[in-house]
Length: 91
Length: 335
Image (cartoon, rainbow over all chains, first blue to last red):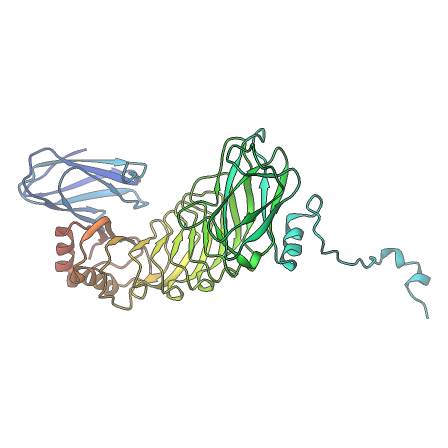
């Protein structure tokens, strides 16, 4: 799903079925790595530096009803997609 | 005075039989053969034919001193991987990892190691105990429930038809247990019985149920119970000073971080813990200590302490931000 950010943040209240991995992409050109926090259901934080597209294994074993994004203000739009299978590292 | 004979009841009294310890590989059950083998210091590896039986499996064993290995029934050893030369019913397992080329046309048979107490490797730390092949025999549930005092390596890290069962409780010198990705093996027992353990890898296997504390394994280097829900391994990851891979993804082993570890100097691959015993202070200290140790992010570079772990507090905020700038991927429960 594509997510528009305002001042580097967004809150999406939408049911996301159980997933085991997700991918994150930014379509604008970035010069440096960007710190990202993706917060699921206000409780679980995925915290990382974004340097390019990322595939992320995360099995919360629960349905997500709310998703929050916190990142640099310069980021205007991102795309996150959720997958039922784990991303195979090194593949 | 009447006895049973007079009362006519003797027919119901079972006759005493003398126990015959000689194994009958054709007739005795595997469990009876195991008992008999134990008395004779032998170790059995049951094999079962697969497909049309024309293929050759390679079985890798190692011993602390050379020992004879026999094969029963229709099983045969060969001296080449094609199964065309040196047909025999016995071979020698040497002190280096020894490949045995085995063919079994049909049915089942046993590999009989003649010195169970000298067996050191069912495979090695890097080689699986069996390389399966089309129409070749498989290891049909080899039970580890023997006294195997010198076994160091058990490796079957593949989704094979072959599998192991039984407890590691009698494998006191076990250093590496690697059945990553093997879906059929059912291994139980306590790592407390195996103080030399350095590698415990049961990732992807849902049937193994290991217990015990990593505090009993001071040489631990690698703990991977990812995807295995039945194992329950406790202990203090701060004491496992050589370990840089704790992957308990999907497993809720009650690990803690009590002893603060300042030497996270070897690269941290993965720390993935979901433990109800991990308090906020422990979670904070873990981030703070890894950050202050200066260890760079490498390889897996993930620290995942969500699930049952307590939430972070502001005490670790600076450390978390610092770790992220170093390239770590963090997953934690929000304050």
